[in-house]
Length: 163
Image 1 (cartoon, rainbow, N blue to C red):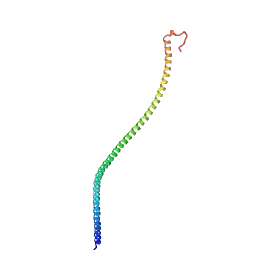
Image 2 (cartoon, rainbow, N blue to C red; image 1 turned 120 degrees about the vertical axis):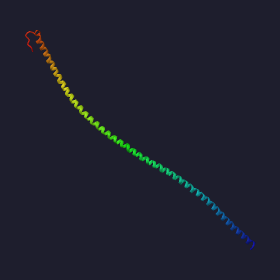
Image 3 (cartoon, rainbow, N blue to C red; image 1 turned 30 degrees about the vertical axis):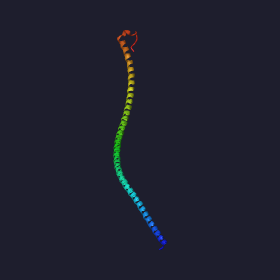
Image 4 (cartoon, rainbow, N blue to C red; image 1 turned 120 degrees about the horizontal axis):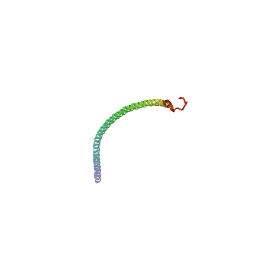
């Protein structure tokens, strides 16, 4: 081999060695990057696990809160139903009382009407009694005059007859 041939050979081997070194360096760099990416992914998966665990705890608290809320709603509905039942009963009692008041007012109206009729009758009787009293007073007056004439004949004018 000639000197040129040897140089070419050394250059060829150098190129191959440089290519191999570059290939190994590229592969090392690739492996390093892949390791970093895998580490970041592992960290992300770990964080996801912690997040899922935290979400699980939060959901357990939420379920507990929702159970308490559902129980509270059931108690509230029962309380409302009890209150509405009492309102219904009291409304029925009030309606009965109002009906009784209406009946009493009707009876009282009839009684007042009867009293008005009786008062009119009493008024008529009083009028008749007043007229009778007037007639009686006239009669008593005449009787008094007649009695006076009979007990004191000297007070009579001469020749006047009794009435």
